[in-house]
Image (tube, rainbow, N blue to C red):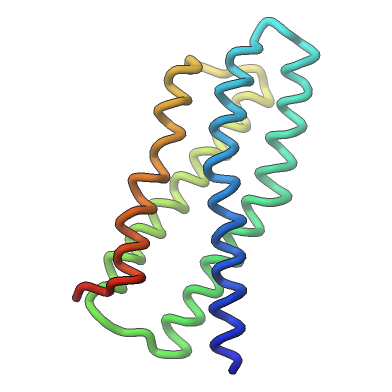
Length: 140
């Protein structure tokens, strides 16, 4: 029964984390577009900081913790698990990269265009699709 609850909470944590991973780069796009609007930039800084530290980071930590608990305590096995862990590691690195970009915006040192952030915003999709396939289909 505990495993069932853990899986449900894991999904909620993961949805929370991914919502932030998709939305923060979108805020970066708008922030880069508003570079000449000081008041707008300050508003984006607050939104980005609250999203990153209040939603994304706790969601990411709880996702990884609950996933590792299910994998190692409850003995999820199979060849699909190692590639999935590698994809999760890529997502964690993307999360950290978002944090570095957030820091640059907070210090008014953005070095990228809105178009660059639009492409940057697509990266989690490239990781999410194979991760879901590995978790649901478990092909090997």
